[in-house]
Image (cartoon, rainbow, N blue to C red; front, side):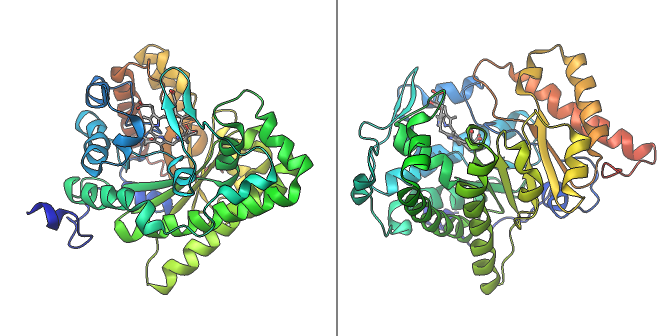
Length: 375
Ligand code: CP3
């Protein structure tokens, strides 16, 4: 196939392993599907080699590099889904903000938003195709190169998480600069969250048009909000994103499962399960059985092994996975970690995690247990 043909979202190879998609619909599967957040990351030597000496966001802008990095973990492990290599901070960039990835420090905004007047610096109407077309190209190219092995997940940061970076200017323990806006400038906060929501909806629709087969929304900073602030400044926008994306997709006769991952928002679990997302992602602070009860079997669940459990010996990982599967049941469940993989993790232990999920969930079927759904 010519290079140009690889860029067209047409005639994608047929999907061979649909366990992940079936699990999002709470259908029966041969085994519990598994993937890891940050599966394309620095714990892999081949990732470090590909990324060596290259600027992070330059890498994000190269469809070929993103495709290669997305495929790397699939060559090592039988993951049941791939997630496109990119970053949540491409949206603030598309809205006109500068973001650098500083080694040892993480994402850094040289000129963060300080006061409500600074909203004027942002591009209100973003031409998503022009500013983020490189992500769409990466998705289309990857859909061809993945050869139908597993579905490809697209993603975005959620409005509050993006807003917190744009105001804080980088990572933070307290995110007090960003939270100051919520208490001191609620109207401007809502204005910014609305602007971000509009861009995110267009961005997710573009990802589906380019070939994404599922979408995950990362509200990674949900946990620094209390229940009331979560309900006021996070939840309405998460809800809007699912509603608008689904409405628009329906118009074009498409339907793509959506996952919401609001890290540490245990208090919001009931509400999150009623926001039209097919799947709710969980961090490791939530007990699997309690999560099933509180979500009432209406959604699939994804997660939630403590990433640090991967530091345990392999036999112990296997036991932890078994217990997790017993807690969630094997239907309507996608195994994952409760957050991303860390750079110092041993790839062999990641392999042991994936293998344990497959082995224990197949064994469950042999014993006649079709998954209790946590009941
Ligand atoms: O494999 C995958 O999961 C897909 C790729 C992916 C990346 N970032 C690649 C990346 C995804 C889904 C993200 C999302 C992302 N980015 C989030 C939400 C998920 C979460 O972790 O809560 C957040 C908060 C960011 C912002 C961001 N980008 C951070 C905090 C960092 C780490 C900085 C550091 O130095 O540790 C990044 C950089 C980043 N994004 C890396 C990767 C693989 C590591 C840097 C590198 O490759 O050089």
